Length: 122
Image (tube, rainbow, N blue to C red; front, side, top):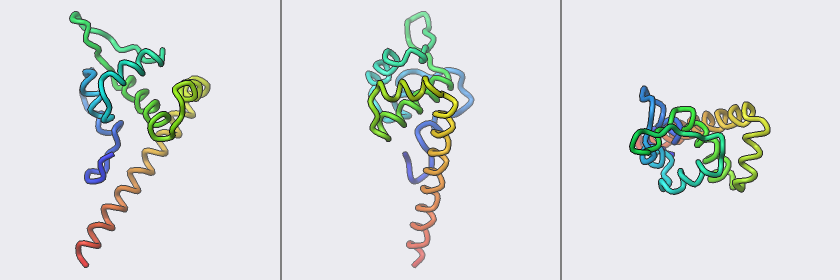
């Protein structure tokens, strides 16, 4: 997460594009493309389209799901099985919780930025 511009990996991805390459998705979450491919294989609800060359084309919905996976696995330390169960059992609740956490992180980063600006004025 970038403290300077107060964005989270999932927020950085939101734009007007319809499809994103695997390298764009990996860059947004600061992970290797191999991890994106691995998560795609492990989580059957992520099904990117493929172009004629076989390149993956991820939608915003796919990226949002990667955001959930990233949150549970990387930020909360859950296993892949635990994250898979959590998302499958109650996806709406998992998405709502994730959105709340992301909003709180954004508020925290804004406050930290304000504090740093105040410290610079002193």
